[in-house]
Amino acid sequence: MEDKRIAILIDADNIGSQYIRTIIDEATKEGTVTYKRIYGDWTKPNMKSWKEVLLDYSINPIQQYAYTTGKNATDSAMIIDAMDILYTGNVDGFCLVSSDSDFTKLAARLKEAGKTVIGMGKQQTPKPFVSACSIFKYIDILSGEKTTAKQSVGKKTSGSSESTLTDQEQIKESIKAIIEATANEEGWALTSMIGLQLQKLYPDFDCRNYGCSKMIDLLKNLGFEIKVSKDKTTYFVR
Image 1 (cartoon, rainbow, N blue to C red):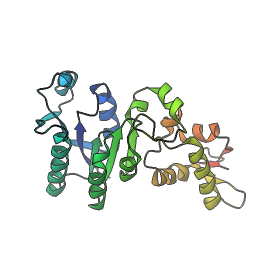
Image 2 (image 1 turned 90 degrees about the vertical axis):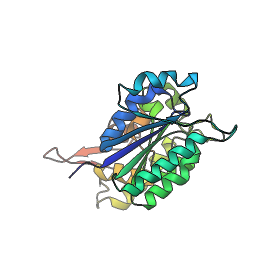
Image 3 (image 1 turned 90 degrees about the horizontal axis):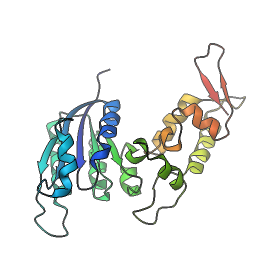
């Protein structure tokens, strides 16, 4: 099957350049990146760190002046560009990199058009934007900021400084429900189905968010029993 064509659009006012390697790595797992654009006011000194990596990653900077105080012109430019790219029909999916809830409606609109929407942002990304995406990746966790991730698991978000990462206990309860719905007479369910169903329920689900590299490891950590088939090709859980 041919790789999906992905357009990466980055909100430079909202995301730091230290995450660029993670952004590119995670996006290329989902398909072939055909657009790489980043939006911001490049006349500002706080853009210096981004300027230093643009050439290395072949990212096209889009200049957007802040014409009016209090209005985010960068968001508007990124939204307009996304819609222009959508209408060209040259991509299968979008990677929207921001922790800003202003992109919630854009993500929903792109999904309505049949496109895969990969959101990337930090843990305080508002839940509506996370939920509007097909997949959401917390780039601060995936970049190795694991201490913050562990401290924030299970928190209820009431402000922009708190994590909106789906609670680990909520994940555990959902796994129990999936096993109950799909298990055989002996109570065993295919582990391969668990991750797929969780991704449908929670766009931000990723084993790595909970300190595990594989689904099997997460299931074990959550107290589920695992068995392997005689030919060692299939895993079951209960």
